[in-house]
Length: 457
Image 1 (cartoon, rainbow, N blue to C red):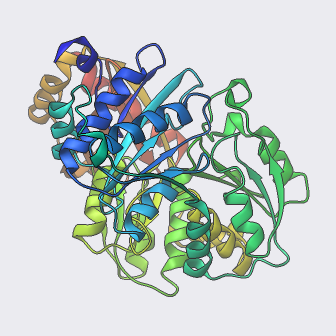
Image 2: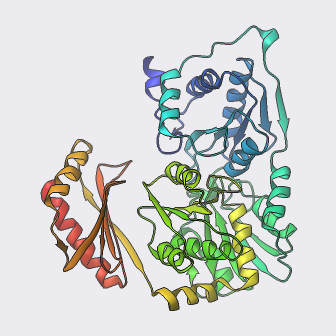
Image 3: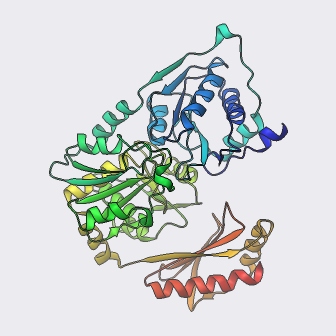
């Protein structure tokens, strides 16, 4: 296939690379692979707020059209979940989304979204890699049409109907981080009746000189607006608005697992069904589920696995510890826009701080942290195999109750505390996670995890 194709690697969520590698010729190869894989359309093409994204989207649209496929091209940069929902709503063959999500401005990427609107599984992305090729157009008379269209408005109308809430009297501070949630998430909240204070809602392809990742250390103004200002609630999206962070007056930046617990319990007021979470997401979800007679399904890290389990187990909701959440009946994919409206609806009914207080009263507090242990990529699999044979019956003075190997090696203790060792997908490291009922116990478990792993590396 040559060096152009060799540089294209589909990871957890499509292909991302710096702009010296992410080039138009290679993007066209991805478009050709999708055209060959799908054979027919229509196909939606969306793009985020980066300077280069519209141009790459046009290259994809031309490549697909050159294969005789009808293309719906977004008329503006838009959130990834808008494109995913469009695929499902309009019964399209699939979609391509040009985005590097939360990565810095010198990156770009492309995601393939199959017909159900859920993330592509490895059996699909592996086929796409095999099909990478230079464009092979049909005769010009057989080209598909490229129609530029508004994907956002139908999505907003659906979201308002799906959540159906009145936010009159609620003040929400919304931080778009200059990403594609701009004029979408804030507009949705306003249409539902909220007063919205906008932060970083101007178009800036450089994202203000930082990465559009909604972590606490990048959300100072939003946190201040809620904890010291007029806002009842704070919401931020990442660059392509598939993830969400929430800020409350008392908690400040809300741990994503607590976000999940609150949203799941809110949905259970009028619904039912299991929750799906990754192995590294807090067991507080399990405690909420048990209280309501529901089950929890645990998956490997990566929302593609969450989305598949949401389907397999007819789940109410799925989520992960990085702030990606989806509702099965809406879209089996991360959606930071609709979830923002859902969080505001929960706040309007009862303050999220009060909801968290009730969860703590019922289930106690949980704490989580992680460390990294250097490990060459070629040793990762062997270390995990050796760990399987080296596991004692007790770790850090606690009896091992269960071992899960769905993603690395997760040890759960009789008190519901746990320790997880899994390989990093991006660095020559093993990640060691721990969760416990006190920060001190978390540190003890992390130390024990390091002592288990380091001699095997």
